[in-house]
Amino acid sequence: MRYSIAVMPGDGTGPEVINEGLKVLDAAAARAGFSYELTHYDFGGARYLRTGETLPDSAISELGAHDAILLGAIGHPEVKPGVLELGILLKARFALDLYINLRPVKLFPGVETPIKDKGPKEIDFVVVRENTEGLYASTGGFLKKGTPDEIAVQDSINTRKGVERCIRYAYDYALRDDRHNQLTLVGKTNVLTFAWDLWWRAFNEVGDADYPKVRREYAHVDATCMWFVKNPEWFDVIVTDNMFGDIITDLGAMIQGGMGVAAGGNLHPGKIGMFEPIGGSAPKYTGQNVINPLAAIGAVQMMLDYLGERDAAGWVEKGIINAVSKMQSLNAGHMGMGTDEVGDLVAKFVANKG
Image 1 (cartoon, helix red, strand yellow):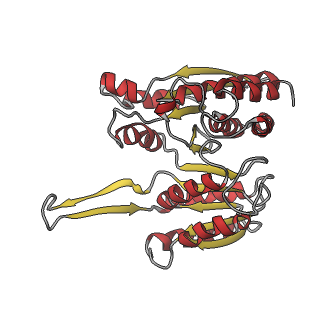
Image 2 (cartoon, rainbow, N blue to C red; image 1 turned 30 degrees about the horizontal axis):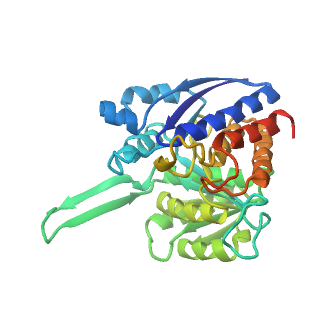
Image 3 (cartoon, rainbow, N blue to C red; image 1 turned 90 degrees about the vertical axis):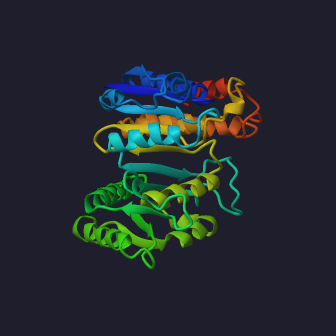
């Protein structure tokens, strides 16, 4: 197989960690016998400051022609917050209809978690977040803006099509051979009675009709936050809406050891996927060779899995676990080795069939 991959290294330390991810991709391709072609794009803060462009419309069709996108990190200290996030990340999600945000929450051996008496056996679940609707659809407006009587309305948009396709993907994921046939709907049915009535009905109707082998659970989002800390082993695959998914996956990243190991994917199943480390651009560490690249390497692992190269994805995950065992810390500047050395370590493990 030959894959076409778009690369957007982004801002700050993004190019550094993406470079290490590409090292690992090269090692995996050589071992697995597939090939790939990279196309690099400079969308990010520096380009915006130079040209005033975020993600031009002309780039959408170009990006969409690829099998996958590998993204570094978006965020520049000289650009107002929200400009790049809305103009690049959210625009790409909506324009390419990347309706699934996939966030594995997996604690690797040797990685510390802030949860007492929990380990890799207990912290291993996946969050499937609807990615193109909800409060992020940006519908609403102001009335009497700037006056004492100002009203601001932000609407949560939930369509049957959008909800059902997300739920179906989550059911399918729960049936994978590396999951445990359990799916939990996380919502707020007791208060948000319109949107979550739709989610509840779709969840059960789809499950009854097509997924009898999947065990169904439901949890309120506030209770889920408690149980992530108290009993993370209760979860296998979680499906939820855009806002709740955004919140609980950051909590998930912390219990799996922090942003240094957390990766995510924005997917249109059957079409393109965009994969990224979850942490920010960390501009204060730019060029110092001290940032942890494991999340970016984890994004490559997710990309390989999505492309169907599951053996290669498994090798990369084992390479990450091997690297963790040799690092002094996962924190920038305290790893006991440089950014490039961590990338070399994982790539060598993958290439040497460790």
